[in-house]
Length: 273
Ligand code: MG
Ligand code: MG
Image: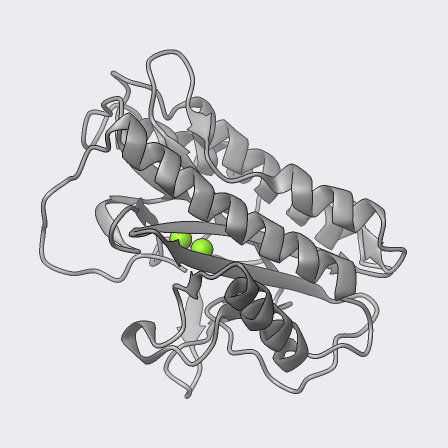
């Protein structure tokens, strides 16, 4: 889930102890997403994976961050094909060829974790597989810039520059965000921007970086449910997210997609990205 624009607020830098608490929540998120990766296949619905996630998070004695957040009704955002982010879990049964962005947040011991992964179900079109790969790689281009002394704009620029090389659309209206005791904190982390612009990064800043990239034009619309974001041209969109902490030489990635990717490897109905 991404940042909704609000008034400027304080930036919170985290102690090492707080960072470890956020890591714990992030790993719970990724365990949940790995569980989803083990059960998602053609015929399964968003409602079903959401129920599985709620049970999983409950068993961890944690709280789903998204449920009731600004009125969001579920533990997961489930966004299929042309849906960019913030899709509601519904009774639509996933089909061979669908891509499904699953975004999850967990609150545990006073801190939130946030991560997202887009699953490719069955025989996904080559162009869409390329979109997924480029979006995922762009996330790591951004993370490479989440180091002390650089600026928010360096992260934003690196994501945008990489995706534009492939002529994909970079969604501008939604951004990554600071995270900690609140699901969404300052600063916003856009996926487009100018190199060397924005806030200077300091060790201890924890941010969720989440490129939202489209196969066609970058323009989006909100469905009548007031949540689901879709591409205006209804072409597919991809979304990958990590929570990271800014450090001196290299960002420390607090979430762990490798758990999800192991589940994908072991699920014959999913394609590896
Ligand atoms: Mg998220
Ligand atoms: Mg987020």
